[in-house]
Image (cartoon, rainbow, N blue to C red; front, side, top):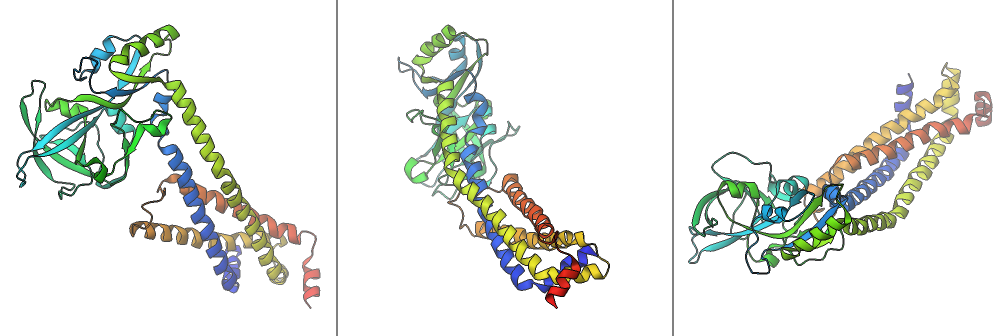
Length: 403
């Protein structure tokens, strides 16, 4: 009965309800982008929150020590330090395509990651999938950067690398994914800034890098006996019971291999940056909430005022006077359902057309939860407003006034 009356009221005021649907859909779309923006601000901190909040060092490996010898053994670094929990790094190496149609061999850059890094952060891809834990097989799985060579996901390349003795090693590389040009990746550069968590990353642009890059797991490189050097960003985390003196000693010892900075300082600047970014969004968040509350109150009041006589008739026909709130609730649920579907249809459609690539839009559970929060606020308001308006009015007074 209540549901049928709610549907009837929705149809009776279809013109006004269509305007409400458009207004609520726009509000939901705004909340989706706002939530995505907040998520984007945190998306590059959360993957390495554990490392950044630990005792230890944020390091920029130089690739070569002071004697100009390549740095290629983490165990050597670990052996010189005290109270080490974990060391993570980025690795680089060249690999050559001797079978191309070009007159000269084509040289690709390899950027390799420890498992901790490639499982914690997954960059945006144009196609395929990102690196996973080690896979058994005859191929070296790799994600390739945007390139002009026509190499795409699913291709298999016959390439040549080098082992520790500088001997050639033939390896078949299977392209499991293609990086989206301009996507953020964990940085392989050792000369970038070290201010906060954002400096862990670099925007990979093919035109700036000049060479095509293959992103692989360092464990897979070792499986195929390919050599590398440690060069780029990484972490050295300490045990919780390490003393300040031991920490300073470790920092001095790694100076031969890398530039090192205390993680607590980098983390403090990271938290400060995130707080500032969220503070900038606070007025927008408050504005959206006020828009939802005020607009829903106004709409509910208008609808209730227009339907007062109908509510009175429903009462005279046996309906409870308090059921007006439930009728309003059903009406709002229909409006909210259409608005939710409309907002997501438009956003998904624009995304499929590639019109939102430059935005921070993310399809995750958080924008959906934001929409549900707004809808719930509207539901509560739509239930309370009719009750507040008619609580001191009787059905007889309403009918006699309209007569």
